[in-house]
Length: 260
Image (cartoon, rainbow, N blue to C red):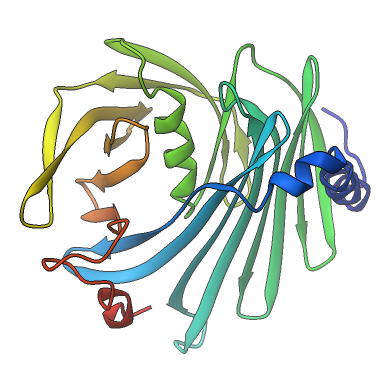
């Protein structure tokens, strides 16, 4: 592994996004999807995450903002925000570029991944100073997990929409607080279920179990692969997508009641 100047890599990533074909930017107004995820601890909403997908030529541009309130070192309640910008292949959702920016208590943390042919570059920057590493790129499609960003699970479930399998290996790049690892996770297909939407209609849900080491999440997605629910039994964490339109059972004003 070799250290590089992370500032040059941030500029390289932003420049590569700016150099997408001109006709692609004209299509960006036509969103493939946009929604909000609510994050629960038990029965309490503790965070929300808004995301959107936009076509950019032969790529999909995924953006998201995760917001909540956390306690700082002095015990004060301080806003926490984390943004992601992800570029994936529009056909199979394989990784092309990744960038996240976390803001908390006056500290900015940037992380990113730049895949190449046989290597990928991981960089991290904290308040202007940082480091970068070149690492051997694992074979196959790559998917990113970055702590506290649940839209990345939505990308994963969309990548297997319409596919029939019992067990599938998934090559991950996992970004921890101070680490980057490349584990192979396992996605296990479960039995389909149904979700009631409003008073009359129902929706088919496809169940999956995501396992990476000792970490295990239960996922549920619709026919298009859109993540509807994520649970982590050990911590009591639950993430749910808000309905696409207000219903009598669950109006959108629930957002206003979220204590974030």
